[in-house]
Length: 596
Ligand code: DON
Image 1 (cartoon, protein in one colour):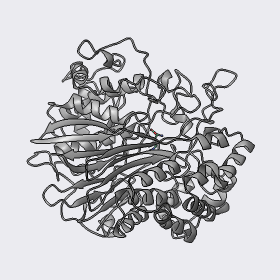
Image 2 (image 1 turned 60 degrees about the vertical axis):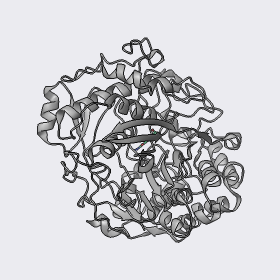
Image 3 (image 1 turned 135 degrees about the vertical axis):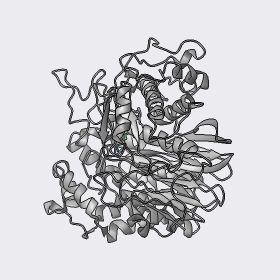
Image 4 (image 1 turned 180 degrees about the vertical axis):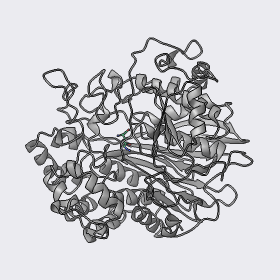
C-alpha cells in the first residue's frame, strides 16, 4: 500500500464497482502486479470529501489540492497542476507542447479547450521526405525540425480566464517554487533520464539540465531549473503574451532559426486556442442514464470512444476474464480504428463526419459486421461509410490507411474535481517522452508533435507506426490528429467519473475500457487492459491476463501479443451514495491521487 501512504486521505472503498450495483463481474479480477512495477497495487481509492486531484506525480496532485484549499476551483487547480507537472514531470508535463481539456462545471456548462500544437507556417507536406523519396524517420521525432508551435501556455491561460477564479500569477506560484527551489529526483525519474540520455545528450541545455551536465541525476538529488523558473515568472507577470510575443518567443525563435527549426515569431504570434463544444453521447446502463462528455476532433479519441460505446450497447459484457466479452470489445475496437484511420483529421481543414461516426444507427451497421464467435481478419475489415447511415456501412469506397503499433511512454492525463462539483479532465503532451529532446534556452522541453501528422502518405510515422489518411497530411497551421481522450461521465445527470490516459493510440482503448468498467463492470483502474487497433491485426494484452483467456482468444482466430502495460489512467469517481470523491492514480506507475 505504498501509494496510499503517500496520499493525504485514504479511502475505505475499493477502486472497483463504486458506480455499479449488483454486477457479478465487479471485483472479479484482481490483477497481479506487472513485472516492471515494484510495489503492490492499491485496492482502495483515495477518498476526499471536498476535492481530489489524480496525476502521475504526488507533487503535481498536491499543488492542485493546495489551490482548492485556498479557495480555487477545479479549473484553477487544473491550471496550477499543469504548470507544476511541467516542472516535476519533464517527460510529458509541459509548456512546450500542447493538449486538450474537457471542463464540466457544477452548473452543467461544458467546454473543450483545444490547445493542440499546429504546424509552423514554413512546414510542408513533404518536409520529412528525402531526395530518395524515403521518409526520414529521425527528423519528425528528434531535434528542432520535429517541433510544432506549442499551445499549452495559451490554452492554460484561456481556460483560467474563462472558468477559473484566480490570477495566473497565483496558480503559477507553486510551479515557480518547484522550478526555483527544486524537487527531489525519484528513482523512477533518475532511471528515465538515464534511458533518455542518448537523445538528451545531443542538446546542450537538455544535457546541462536533465543529465546534470553528463554526471546524471541520482535518486534523492535536488533538480533545480533556473531558466524554467525565470520563464514561468515572466509568464506569471505578463501572461501568455510573454510566451508568444515576448522574450520567451525571441529566445525560442532565435534557437529555432540557428538549428534548422521552423517555428517563427509569426507562428507564435498567430497561435490560437480553439474552444470547441464537447462531444456528447447518452446511454442507458444498469438502470441509470449515462452521459459521456469527451474530446472532439482534432482528437480521434472522443469519436472512437462514442462509436465503440454505441456498438457495445446491448452487448452483454461479463468482465475481462470472459473471452466472449474481450472478443466483442476487441472486434469493436478493430472497426473503430479502421474508421479513425480513414476519417479523422483537423476539423478546421477537413470535413470530419463526426455526426455520422457517432450516430447510433451507424454503430448498429458496424456492429452487424462482427462475427460473435470468430475473429475478423483486418484485411477484410474496412472503414464504414458514416455518411450513409441507414444504408450499408461496410466496405465503402474510402481511402484505406493502416495503423501500426503505437504507444510511446509518455503524455500525461490528470483529473480534478472540486468541492462544488466542477470537474476537469486534462491530457497534454510533448508527444514522445521528452518530446524532441530539445530544451530551449528558456528552460523548457519542446514537443515533437510533427510526427502525429501523416508524415508520408502510405508510410507509417516514426513513433507509433501510424499510417493515416491524407486529410492528416502536414500543412501550415493544421493541427495533427491526436488520440488524447480526456473524458467526463455523468450518471443520472450528476458528475460521476473523470478519466483519460496517455499511450498513443492505446489512449483510446485505455480510456474506453475505464469508461466501460465504470459504467458496467467495476474495477475501473486496476482491471487488465487490452487493445486492438485494426492493423496490425492483433490484440495487445497486458501481462496479467490468464493464459487460458489468451488461448481461448487464439482459438477464435485472434492473434495476441503481451505488453507490460497499456495506458496510465488517473481518474476520479464520485461515490453515488455519499458524493465523496474517489481518486485513483493508475497503479501501473508512481502517480498519486490526493484528496481532502
Ligand atoms: O496526441 C497524440 O495522440 C500523441 N501525441 C500522444 C502521445 C502519447 O500518448 C505518448 N505516450 N504515451
